[in-house]
Length: 379
Image (cartoon, rainbow, N blue to C red):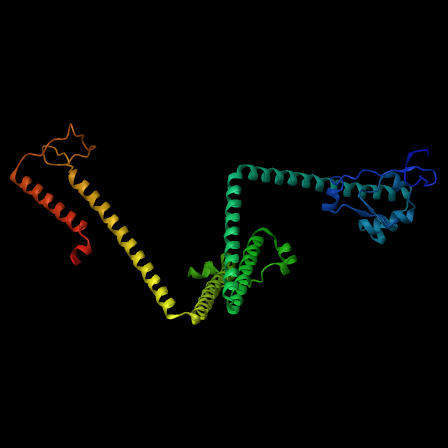
């Protein structure tokens, strides 16, 4: 059985049968150094260092190494280095500079930790508090995606069914316009979030929109305002104009796609009817006429049912005559309508009786006119 020893990699020999030690690497250990750029290049070895020089490393350096570190990494001039004659002064200066950079790195890391914690907290609160909203947004997005894919599938199936090459070309133009609209929307959303530096860095990925600024201060008519600091602020309306143009072109192309499909459908139906016999043509026309007659009859039945419902509602309204109670001086009360037990009855008079007879006669005439059908007049 070979001897197993956990020794460092540089002292382990393959012939001795030792196990190479693999140090565990944690991604969070070097995350700060990666994002903050705290790596330092060691001039003696040419490798990257994650920490600054220690006292032992500085005290073991030679004078020319100390001067080179001070000159290259800390910006000391030749005159300043020539004034430092003692090695202890060089060591103290280098220790001071390294400690100052170390303090700056620590403060930078602390700021990074603070903003990381603040951003994580805000995102967690937004996600938890707005979970119903995010669920609704995802449902809306999924429904719109399903509707768009169904429209896309149906359009492609229609183009394949009618064998229309012009409809296929117009349909491809529709897809390109949809992609342009999506690209423009994402670019506008990214311009609200990204800073000027990142917008310039990722400009080749954004939609090429020109700058067409409208200055609201120019419309105020006051030269002091238009020529002042507020006159330099403007609204770039180029994305809105481009978006309107894309929507107009989309509606225009969609219309021409429908026309192309309709033309292909008529051509296909005409081609199918070339071998139709006179009897088949007469049967087809009769079936078409019968379908129209049934649709018209259903529409008439629906109108009659609506007229009967309206007549019944009107008759019920005529039967329930409400009287507004009045006071002794003749003014109407503003209280709630009285019940049937407490409502005062109107005084009997000849004018009141004539009014009731006219109202009843009018209701009977309206019922007869509503229940009458055009077929009765034909009879």
